[in-house]
Amino acid sequence: MSCKVILSKEISSSYREELKATIKSRGIKPKLVGFLANEDPSAIKYAESTSKTCEETGVVFELRKCDKEQLEDQIIEANDDDSIHGIMVYYPVFGDRQDQYLQNVVSVSKDVEGLCHKYIYNMYHNKRFLDEKQTMKCILPCTPLAIVKVLEYIGVYNAVLPYGNRLHGRVITIINRSEIVGRPLAALLANDGGKVYSVDINNVQEFHRGTGLKLKRHEVRDTNLKIEEILPVSDVVVTGVPTPSYKVPTGSLRDGVIAINFSAFKNFEDNIKEKASIYVPAIGKVTIAMLERNLLRLYDYYNCQSS
Amino acid sequence: MSCKVILSKEISSSYREELKATIKSRGIKPKLVGFLANEDPSAIKYAESTSKTCEETGVVFELRKCDKEQLEDQIIEANDDDSIHGIMVYYPVFGDRQDQYLQNVVSVSKDVEGLCHKYIYNMYHNKRFLDEKQTMKCILPCTPLAIVKVLEYIGVYNAVLPYGNRLHGRVITIINRSEIVGRPLAALLANDGGKVYSVDINNVQEFHRGTGLKLKRHEVRDTNLKIEEILPVSDVVVTGVPTPSYKVPTGSLRDGVIAINFSAFKNFEDNIKEKASIYVPAIGKVTIAMLERNLLRLYDYYNCQSS
Image (cartoon, rainbow over all chains, first blue to last red; front, side):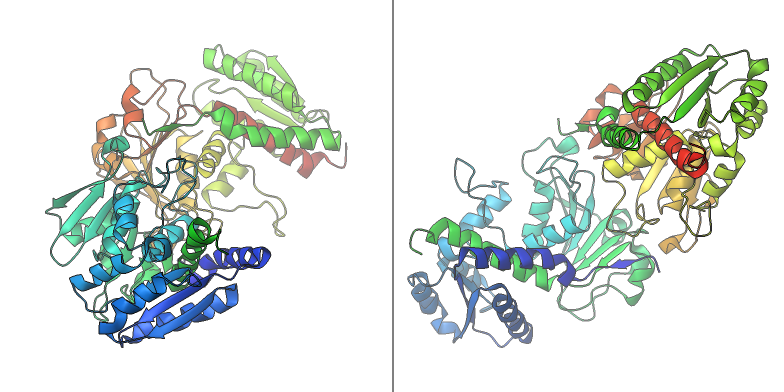
C-alpha cells in the first residue's frame, strides 16, 4: 500500500515542544478556562484531551461546568478576572444564533478560539494583522488554523511561493460549511491562493481569488456542480460531516488524493488507503496545539504588562 | 502578477557550491572531455557554458572538435585514457540510429550523460542502484535528471511521501518524446509516482504506476486524448519543442499551473505569467550541474583506486 497515514500526534509534536519550551524558558503560567454547558460526549472527550495536553505543555487549564442559562454571566466574570488569559466554550450550547451571540461575549483579548466578530471579520477580509505596524498577527479560529497547519506539514502549501499565495494551483474540496470550521476554512484556503469547493447539503460553492490570483481576497460564487463532478478534480479533500453513516466514495476520488478528516466519525471508506497518497484520519491534537498557541499570542498581546 | 519566475541559476547554485567544495576539499582533478562533431549553434553555446561552469567548480574540461567519421575512434581513445574520467558527445551527430550506437561506444565507466544501454535500461526498469548492496546509485541522463531536480526544488516532489513515491497524485504533461529527454523523463516521473502524459506529434501516451501505485515500475499506454484535453488537468507542463513557432496555449492551462521550458526556444506564450504559479523559463545551468555530479559519481565508482 503506497498511502502514507499521518497522525495528528506527529503533526502537532513540534508545536507542542515549542510551546513547552517557550512557557518553561519564560517562566510564565498562562491560564485557560473552558466552559462546558452541554452533555455532548465528544465535547467532554475534547475537554479531557485539552486538559492533558495543557498539563504536559505547562498551561494551567480549568474546566468549568455550568448550566446554559448561567454561561453568559460566567463568561463575563472570567473576562474580568486578570488571572485568566484565555476563554473557550464547548459549542454547540444552544445550537442556534445564541451561540454566535456568546462568541461575542468572550473578550477579544481572551478569545483563544478566534470566534468573535473582529477575528472572523479580519479572516474573511484577508487582513492578517491587528495593528498597523504588522507586529500582532490576527487570531485565527483553532480548527481551520489546525487544518492549515496540517496542509503545511504534508506539503500542500508550497514554500517556494510567496507567503499568502502558497496554495496557488491547488484544488481543495471541503465537505462541511459550518460557521465554526467549514466556511472560515474555505475562506482561509482561498485567501492563500487555493481554488476551494465548499460542499454542504444544499449546493457546492466555489471560493477563489480569480485567475492568476488577481483578487486580494477571496470571492464566493454558487455553482451548479455536483460533488461527483468536483471530487475527481480535487487534489485535497477535507471532510467534517458529523454523522457515522456519511462516507466519501473512494471511487470518485483522484488517484493520489490527499484525504483529511476532521469529523469525530470516519468520513472516508476503509479502502481510502488504496487510492490516497496521504491520509490524515484526525486532527484533534493539532487543534489543541493551536488553541494553546493562540493563548500564548493573547498572553503576549494583552497580559504582558500585568504579569 | 502572482507568478513566481525561477531561474536555473538559482536552482543550480547549491549543487554548484557543493561540487566546488567537494572537489576542493578532496584535492581531486576530475576531467571531462566533450566531443563536438556538428555545427549546431546551440551545441556550441552549451559547450561554452559547460566550459565556464567546469572552470568555476574545479572540473578540467576539454572540448575536442572532430569530423563525424572520426568520432568513434576518438571516443575509443578517450575510453582508454586513464587521465579522462568522463566523456560526453554533443548530439545530434548523424541524427539517426548511428547516434544511439555511439552512445554505447562511450565506456560505461565514463558515460556522464547516462545514455548507454545499461543506464537507460536501469532507468526504465526503475532499478536505482548498480550494485546489490545499494551503495552505487545509477547514473541518470543529465537533462531528465535536471528536470527532476527542478521539480524537487520548486516543491512538486512531496518530501513527506517515501522516496520513490514523491510524485503520487501529480499530473504532469511533457511535450517532447525524444529518446534523449522526453521519453526517459516520462519514465522517471512515472516511476516516482506521477501520472504522466507524454505528447509528441503523433499522439498522447500515458505513463503511470496504476491506481495506488500498485506497479513497481511504470507502464505505458497509448490514449486517444488530445492535448487540449490534458492541459486543463495538468499540475505541471514541461515543454521541449525545438522550434520557435510552437507555443503552448495559455488559455488551455489550469490556473496555477507550474510551467517548465527546456527548449532553446520559448515554448510558452508571453502571458504565461498571468496564469502560472511558477514558471521556469530554462534549465541549462541545472543540466550542467548534473553533468558534473555524474562525473563525480563515476570518478568515485571507477577511478578512486587509480588516482
